[in-house]
Image (cartoon, rainbow over all chains, first blue to last red; front, side, top):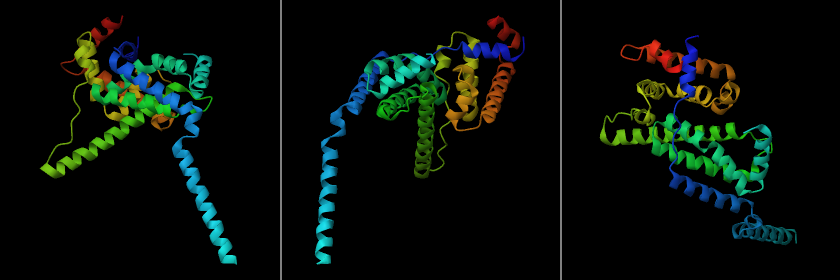
Length: 72
Length: 195
């Protein structure tokens, strides 16, 4: 047996950490909630997204008007 | 977790399937926590980093590539979060030092695993792992303890596979040396324990 084999064996057999059950449940629930928010269609048309689209639209309309006035 | 079921779980996760997330969580949570506890040497820090790791997964769920390999992905995030944490600690320690003079940078404490080690040999091994330099410690944790292939471990740490093999080799040598050091358990006891 080489010198490395016992060490490799020992390393593979070291204890695992025990998760805190209460914290694990909390993390899981939080992640599920985030996951649900990520994939619901509502997330893609959220009020914030609509707000951004409105602002962009108004800016474009304003620019077009300004350019039209300048050309006249 | 074989590759086929891993791909199914990734597909489920991309669609927001909570059951797929639960399966991934159950399969990898203990491994990630164990890795982070040994890497950070602090249970509270490890739990915070673990929570953030899982949140990163679900936040990126819909943008995951269909062929994502979950183990490297999650360990990369966990490892990078730990690096960020260490950087923030260094900055915090430097700030504190500038306020109150020659404040020493925080020295690493013992591994939480030392208290729960089943025997003296395990306790010494945990202490030796905790005392390894960070780069060698993460290499040993990923390859020798978690059983991740050196090539994947190299991707996780952002280095070449050859550099990873060298780090693992140096880490193992340092551990063997620590166990053979005066006052440590002799190699014969090591062999008896594993025979």
